[in-house]
Figure 1 (cartoon, one colour):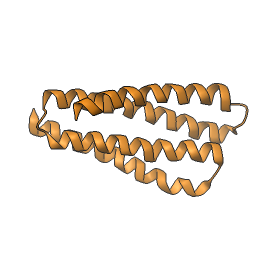
Figure 2 (cartoon, one colour):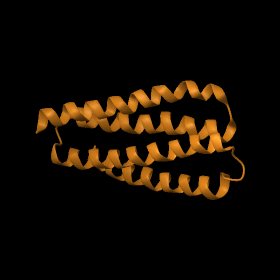
Figure 3 (cartoon, helix red, strand yellow):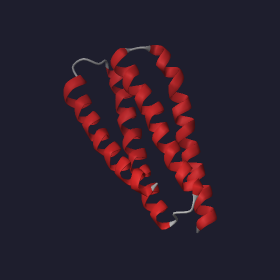
Length: 124
């Protein structure tokens, strides 16, 4: 799983930088200040959790038999897609129903951190 999560974390971080640059340079003139703030939140959480994904991949290399760490990584990636993905789409399309998806992404990210905690508690 480390062979998936470490590169995935690096890829997600690169995408977060790209999305941030796109927002700052390509969307600034097209989005309201409210939607720009939504977009920035998506970028921020995307980057934080991309780094979290990378960290989990490194930890799995240290504790390769931990299923909790593997689950945490999967939840982290899923949470990025649901949380940041829904906010990206909401901000650029103004499709308000996407706001329903965002809390599920947030809960998935919170769960990922708690599962990481449980995995580390068990391993350390």
